[in-house]
Image (cartoon, rainbow over all chains, first blue to last red; front, side):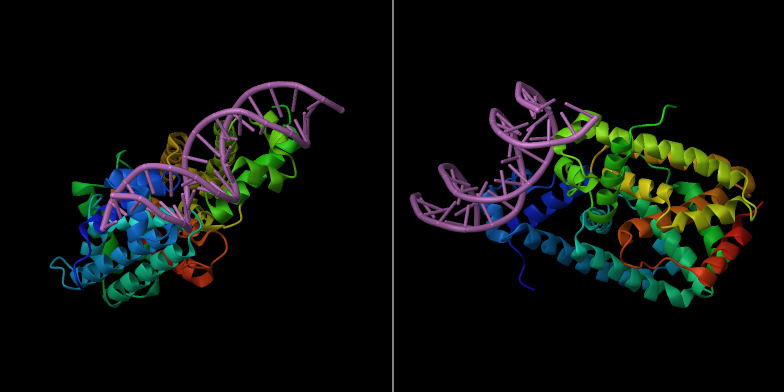
Length: 181
Length: 181
DNA sequence: GTCTATATACAGATAGAC
DNA sequence: GTCTATCTGTATATAGAC
């Protein structure tokens, strides 16, 4: 668990930012290196290939998810409300990592697709015990997926049609009423 | 409304198929032309640029959505059930066009993003009158978004965590119970 | 209307200097 | 550890033959 080199993290930050803001097409090694303030050669010292760079992002994602699962299980307002609310925190490090990974997944990366399926499975395992049954769990998971989808399409810039404030409270109340054990 | 040239439609079919199956990265002019059985030059006669090709896809999408809205409004089992059920028909022409458009949107195409927002607005307008209020409409829309998100990630090949058969019936019952006017 | 050939730009990756 | 220079492949787009 030795702290990773600062330059390595900068490269990962830059890669993630380009993926979130502009999509996979623009997330080239050169563009990533430039945004991170290193040269292409410097980037390739830390990540030996494009694939290694993507793997670095998935590793970062995994760590963040681990912490998120713990937060869901111990949330004061209850797991379902916390889970839905945290599905729409547009500049949370976890949300950025998820959206970046979704961009990779939608461009044919099997590793990224597998990572997203795994996250969803872990969330479902954490939420499941607090719902009334399979259909209720499906409902909660799909609302969360929907929130992520809208976030991913908004891209962090355009305000999407995602409910905020009192609208979000009303949505949570409705979902909990239909699903909470 | 003169019927479009057959070659033009083949090119559009091929472009859509590559986007759905492999993502935006692989949907090059050359790959599209090859899959459509024409040369790159032939493709560029019908669509003068990559942008024109994308615009062609969005036009096709618009026509399909128009028909879908009509089907939602006149559905026998009711608009909400029909809407949710049709959110998961993986090989429907409309669903393929939507997923292809989502790939473009997630790779920085403002036109594709705008098209998806417009579709969502039209759906919400059609569904809204049949729900109990704003939160209920949000719930239905987000479940639909979630189903599309999972379809998009599955990419048509891997079976995703989307409910089928009796599970889908149970989900619809639950959503309608919480939202139907 | 559809083709081949080509111009120009940029992708990922390697070699080797510092 | 980080750089520059370069190899090789492939992208979009244009020109012009058929």
